[in-house]
Image (cartoon, rainbow, N blue to C red):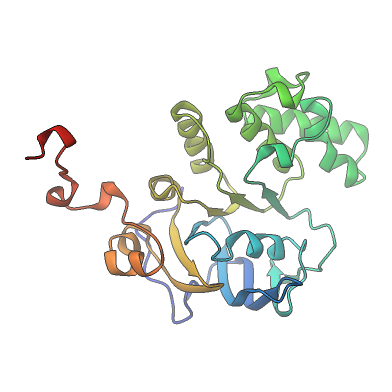
Length: 271
């Protein structure tokens, strides 16, 4: 497991000055939707192999659009995205990178969990025995083997989340992107997800408004606003900067506040 005591980033906001293998690299990425709204305005970001990076910022900052661009679903207007040195080709399938959607219902569509998890490997053209082996391994990793014959729409929110992750794992990507993975999870499911992500071997890029979740999972945090990376660094160092957080539509997590700041008068204590 990587140490959380990581040095500050290099001169490029959100980039890295160290010599680890670069898993994902975005350089000057710009993207506008057909209505002319510019969402990404020069995204520069590097994620090292095996690193867990939290992407935080207000709604509308461009996080999801960046994820769709990084996976090749959207074609940038300018700039490049590279995966282990190779350019991401828009509208092409890149099995080395996987995206776990914010809403599992957007990802699960097959009549059974087994079929959903098998969908990716099958479309990679793998032989049936390899597909079966990958499905079994992914279900085991996510502790969802007992759900294999269930219909996805009959599952709980936490079960759907883990099955959607299994579907990505079955393609054996080296980079996995998670869009708001803890959203709508109960406490038990959230804790299970944290344990799972902390044991992951892949490079992870995680967008979340749950900043306590980010603190527990991520080695590094990157603040994004108005389609640009503002700053990146060690999560506690970045999130303790109240002015920086407020300027970018965020709040310092309660666990990082000074004891005096944490104390709040209850309504029935007011005079």
